[in-house]
Length: 250
Image (cartoon, rainbow, N blue to C red; front, side):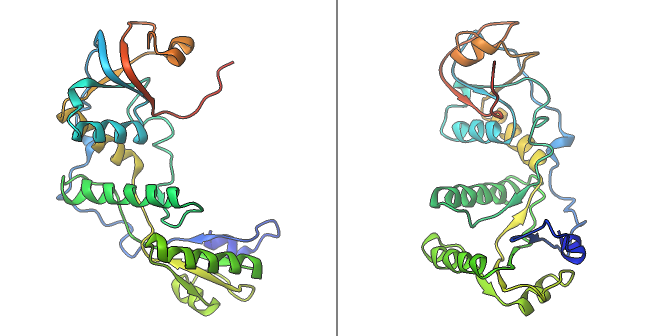
């Protein structure tokens, strides 16, 4: 995005983000890279109390949380391909704490805490870097919106700061600031590695009893009603949750 500010194409308007990191290439060799571990794959059971459809970051996080509540042995995580091989592996990994709604902000803060837990308590590499986010405004209306976010940040307990164009230049020297009204700096924002996080959650869930099963393909109708989850075998369940991308089935 810094390059777009230098070139200044006419179709780029309003908000852009500049992320930077002093230790972008630094890796902690003491951390476990889940992608280098063998994936814990099991067989599809005849029945399960809880079935999670989709083995991406969302499905793995649900499985991990259920396992922490003592439901690991009652839970099956189904995935059609490689764990984390869907939308998770090409996600940007941006973690922005200040969201439009209170619920979204709370979910993002919980996610950040989970990534720090994986790294600090369990020793897994998550790629977490707290680099901060800089939101910039070219119009007074956009700057007014940032002032409102700043006021809301007090109740949401998110550390952020209104900054001048000069401050924006200091935070991200690559950008052009002559046409800016100001910006909003959120130092607690960061970036992480979604694929490593997904696999780390999967391994921890499996250690606590969750069964991870690969299936060749979904049966669309059975997938929707949960009478039978695959073409190859059937599995009855009491509860089901979708941890995969939304799809329209015609």
